[in-house]
Amino acid sequence: KPRVLSGIQPTADSFHLGNYLGALKTWVDMQDEYDTLYFIPDMHAITVQHDPVALRARTTTALAQLLAIGVDPERSAIFAQSQVPEHAQLAWILMCLTGFGEASRMTQFKDKSAKQGTDHASVGLFTYPMLMSADILLYQAEYVPVGEDQRQHLELTRDLAQRFNTRFGAALTVPKAFITKESAKIYDLQDPTSKMSKSGPSPAGLINLLDDPKVSAKKIKSAVTDAEREIRYDPAAKPGVSNLLVINSVLSGRSIAELEQHFAGKGYGDLKVDTADVLTEFVVPLKAKVDNFLDDRAELERMLDIGAQRARAIASETLADVYDKIGFLQPK
Ligand code: ATP
Ligand code: MG
Image (tube, rainbow, N blue to C red; front, side, top):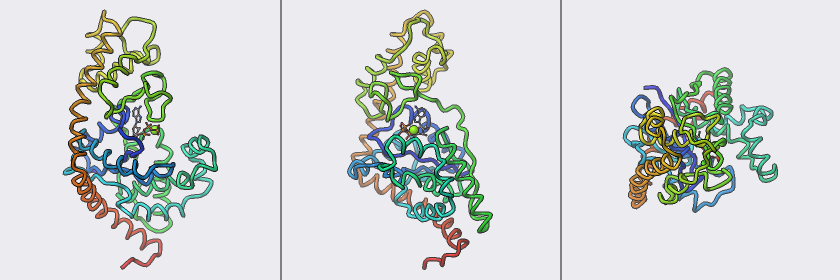
């Protein structure tokens, strides 16, 4: 089976509906056809200011959510990045292979550092792409599912792998972007032309999986629509209605066409009530499962430990080869 690697940051108390429908749902499906490695990049999470207590809690909550949605620790290696020290070790070598100008051209750094001010942006934020490259290259992953925002970083990863292989001898697989089949893009409920995001402008536009289902249902019912009456999928002219149709469709398993038919002649209120119900049916059992997993934190930590051991078995081989080729003495 081809190997796929993907990560999701523990930077919020809950994953949101965009994370789930756009990324995590695919993680579950990929387990059948691929050798899947999933990790929680807690080291990436400290490239911006953070609270240590929250980080630790969010890492275990992230695992609980992954298990609850159906990521299977038998079929997938699930681990925390910081528990596999090879990530930091390979990242250093990759930093030494990256040009300063090359790193300076990363648009995510430019955007984020512009927002924070250069004095507040850390060097870790600057070298984030090289740590991400290490994440991928350690596992010789053939495919990496990436959103548009990570495309440039994956290009850098490919360049660095090729550069290493050319200068020091073939040690690293050059990964390809994995175009996820039809993962949905979810938009902000209050501003349906921007994507739903944890750092979006208004909490009313964001559905967190672990929020009180009643609060989430209210947010759906207050979603921005448009001045027409017709329920039709038309993202350009009707972004709000189209977003609700997509959310409803992916969660209920009914096609958009089926939904259009079902809601023909009905009003936006009907679509909202139905979508709120579909969401509630999804999040209520999910939340119960997450709470159940969180009741036994020792077990969650044990699972992360097993995941880290599985990951290290692969990562340590790559690192040993890299250390050897670059001229380091092998650690005893
Ligand atoms: P930030 O605002 O800090 O960028 P975010 O809410 O966009 O956070 P990320 O941590 O950047 O969330 O994204 C994690 C994963 O979820 C990525 O694979 C990303 O592509 C996916 N994702 C995030 N938001 C959406 C969305 N609205 N629709 C579909 N996929 C999304
Ligand atoms: Mg994002």
